[in-house]
Length: 127
Image (cartoon, rainbow, N blue to C red):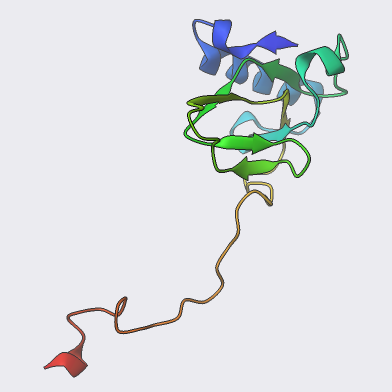
């Protein structure tokens, strides 16, 4: 488990982890490997000295202007007068896939409703 905020060059650490995963898998190309993350429900103390099968555990990151719901594993509104909220342990791993993993953290709006408030003010029907 690594204290991410203690690194002078965290991007270099993540690149080294990506290179190690690429070397351990035959046929993977470094430029085709993408980093993924999974925010766990556990804190540093709850995870302990466990080692993930692949990837690294990091801790020490905080959210500014938002909160974190550990039960639903998603962003929530920040509490009043709370500027920084700690994140639980994050598992960072690499996969041989350049497409990002489907995330359930954000609600995707499929179709927008056009109203008089959000339609294009320069549409041809205005003239």
